[in-house]
Length: 233
Image 1 (spheres, rainbow, N blue to C red):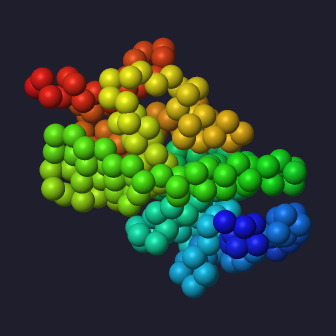
Image 2: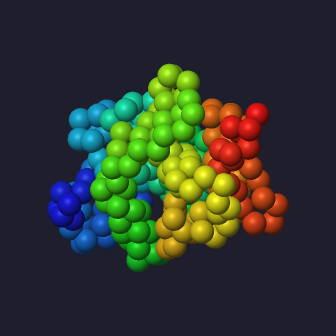
């Protein structure tokens, strides 16, 4: 995919912020769209199907968290990258964003060059993911990488993109212990900096949706997909 084909939606109720980001990303050749609140963002996204959305949290009419939740319910936006760019630095805002389906959470202020670098990193990972066509099969469980879906006991479910990528990584090598650094690098990318709680939040959501027994915590190291012990039960 060429840069000029990539569409980025900027969502912020501060016009100055929009213009600064627009200028810097336009210099890279991306197509830039904009919206002033979450409600408008949904309309613009439905019309133009952006590849990346950079969104504030606190906005009138509909905030960024709610907008993210609405987008993730739509199959058209399962693979869309959603980055929060906000002045809110509280832990609960951070956790709420990832639970809503965010891929990254960045606090303001951020230097334009750093933001541009983050955008490039996220888009590189997006392109890599699109090339994958793998399918994992277990007893009562199918993980379809190409369709970004999970079938558990004949029930199909859709997961937010990062939850799916984390699940797929662990399930791709059952019983292998993945360290936190390796997970962060392969799922979020080495040039994307997120907090220590990011992996924990995503694992908790996967346990709620897929089953507690599938995900084992290896204290001080990381996590593994627990398929062998599951089959022994």
